[in-house]
Image (cartoon, rainbow, N blue to C red; front, side, top):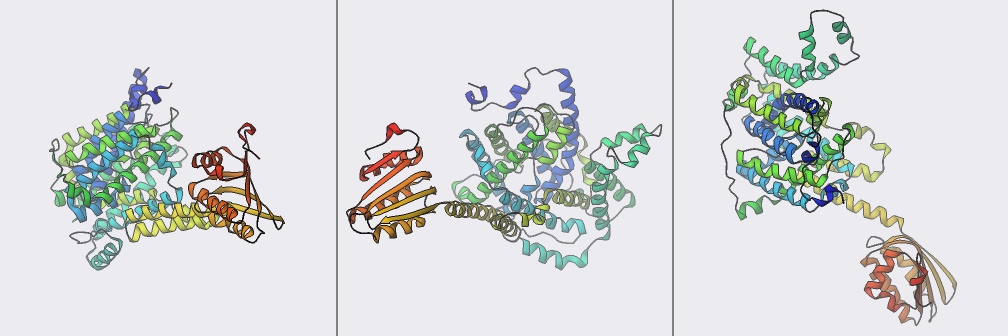
Length: 556
């Protein structure tokens, strides 16, 4: 038996370290340093956009990033705060305070660990892609809207959490916009778009630069991630020109240059009951995001496929720990994971180095963060929101079925206008209802009356609770037949039978008995046959036969 089946809890790092050598170590160190620098502005931006202090995002990236890399079920995934959580975290803080967020995150961590321990990781794959696309695009829109205050430099003391409130507040505060903040945001977004294209392998700028001598230092800057370049250059520009824009220091007083203080979440039964839905939303969103990220990593990294159950357990441990340092929910992050892979990562050691790199930056250079303009962080998040959305899905909707379009659009609209939790619930309910409708349409019955006393019927598809009305023509044919009617059901194409479908067949058998007739069922497949045998239904029929194994046939 394979090791992954023997050990219920086995981090992938244990397997990665088998045969580990110096070459892989240096590759992991290089990748970890790179992605650690990339994570710095994103962690701060995600926390601020969620209504928290920047250090909450930084220490979440450090602790959760370390735990997920050390205990996770993938080799190269990077964990930490994610843009997908901004909307739900801001809403929880708005309604229940930071204490409520810590309790929700802790309980979500326990739930994620339980899901992994119970081997439920594969269930996340059952969430329809239309639902995932709908709420992902909705979250991207809300992230963009939430950044308008800092992007435009509006004088707003506190942004509401709902769509209508955000739009109303921004509209009322537009006369207070700050042209310097708008300039920084625009420069940031344009720079983030241009920087990677400027240094692309086939760009004219790169080819001309390679032809010059004495510019090795300039060429080295091409390795710097675009968010870091934007953060450094635009912060320096704003400080040099003394532009009157809000900074981390002016709003939060800077970032403490020390380890985070331990926090004990106020966990009580009343608090937990009030936070059931936020907890379920964090757990569901964390599971979906982390396993989607793991699947992306599998496609880009030549190695073993991820273990979804181990990954959920690692996510659970991470989210159960971060509340004790005043952190926020964490999950797998696609952008940082892709950066990690492209930087040469080979194992979870890269994720651990990324966490250590962030910790050193916070402990050694935290005072410098006070000069970062919030407009620059808003520009970074606007760019993240644009890349996060799958906008082509709207243009391609006409290629898909009305069911797909309904699920995508309804999930998107409800996410933006109402609530993410409601959107996920609605999307899943719609997917179930539409699936039942689609499956029920595939079931059919053909009825043929040979004479007044003989009725033949052929069953096709799955007879389940959503398709029992399709038996009405058969029941009508039996009721209109002469007494002593003989009914023969051909079940060779009946693939599935549930208890509701069996109950409908019981009603049919009772109707036949009242008419003094007989019922014979032929060519039963294994699943319908097993259910009929266990329920005792076959004792009421006058004959039956199995499709696959003639030796199990009953009296004809």
